[in-house]
Image (cartoon, helix red, strand yellow):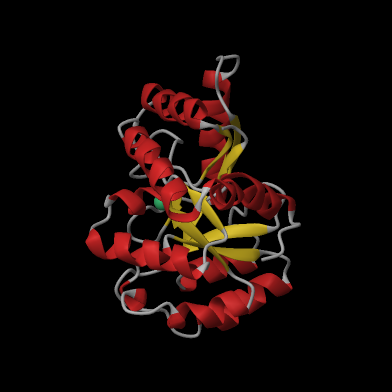
Length: 241
Ligand SMILES: [Fe+2]
């Protein structure tokens, strides 16, 4: 299979908890290319008090990385975005145009606290969309607020946000709860796309196992939509849930 589009991957060296050097980055990218990914968007963390990244320096790091790997065979198409932690700092940056939406500018990856369900976030998501940027929610299956039911997520999705499955959840990489919730949400049809969230070359083996699991859970056609056509349409701004 080929033509997969990864909307969540930590392969810019040395800027967050992802790969530490160009060698590891090449391991991630060639590994994912071997599994079928033809586009992989880098999404380094922008998270206050943890990863104090900002758009302009990240663009410089990414450009330096692109220059370092230029001409290497077997790499997917690369792009830069970010995994934005939703807090007041994010909102301030967003209003100033200092965040990193996906290439094309139609959507942006967001995450929030795993244990504390965010309040009033629908309003912010609405305001994002009024400015042409659709929120893509990273790994919803990891949030404690969805452990028993997907209902708390529904107002966000009804308001136009999208849900992005972290493939490695399917093979227990984030524990039993995340695996169970991911399977339930797949069954309920809540996911719009699936990503790798790769941090290290060693993750690629888990991603490979997760692809098999995804096929078994939803079938090849739905898996292909989650891995290829839906994320491509999200980038193009043409996706209609
Ligand atoms: Fe991530």
